[in-house]
Image (cartoon, rainbow, N blue to C red; front, top):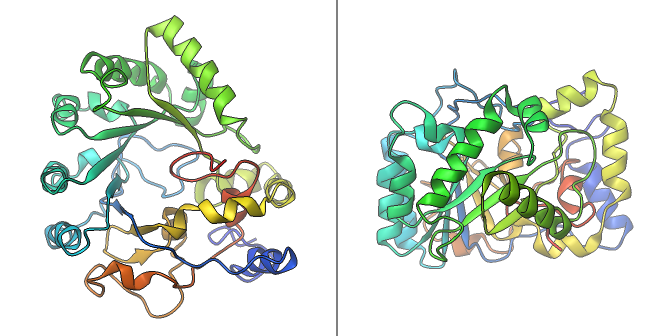
Length: 330
């Protein structure tokens, strides 16, 4: 069982690419790049069971000062990059996080902070929420349920209560109320099943969080758990790996191919290596051809039309209503 690539019994990509051929769909190729997603470090105050980048408190990998400066340079060289999407680990724990945010906002770029919420209560982060609001950073916050049992089971004891306190604090600053302060929540299943319909679940979240805690938000984004890394280990341990992959394959919908995030996004690892998406980055599955880094490409428009590396985990993005860093595709 090859856990890292999550393609037991087949070379990486073969299972997904064969399926595309079977349904008469062309291979995945990149469209125009509009989002630069940067994993600026793997350090995190949590170690969630579903974390596909396997971040945690003991991880030390991080984008260095030269890399941070190069990201700003790429924003200057590529006016078509509308969004800088910052992830980790907990990106806020990187000591260059705020300077990078300021630089991107000064250049008129939309900045997303993929926040685990509890980091806002960590020592040294006491004013991070205020900083995000002052810079009008969009907060994309993980909250896999509106009740404590599922959240704490997936992310650790006490995480739900800390998340609620942080959401209330963000609301007090205007997030979820002021159109300039966007607050999106992220749901991912706690087990081997597909997310429910995003709109219906969003209504349920809105009702429960509002009634129980007075919390408001803009959108709920549903993201399918990918059968890689920690979640793959869990599936194998529970004897559910093949059943879960079969579930994803059986719910494949070719209509999702047009909107998968790898077509308009470039993922940057903490060491500067370029990937087609965050999941490929977690697997070390680089785009076809020689390794390229942020220092090898000045004009990201030249990547348009390039082939995209695929694996069996790509069924996760194309199953059901589809899945991406922006939630359901349809």
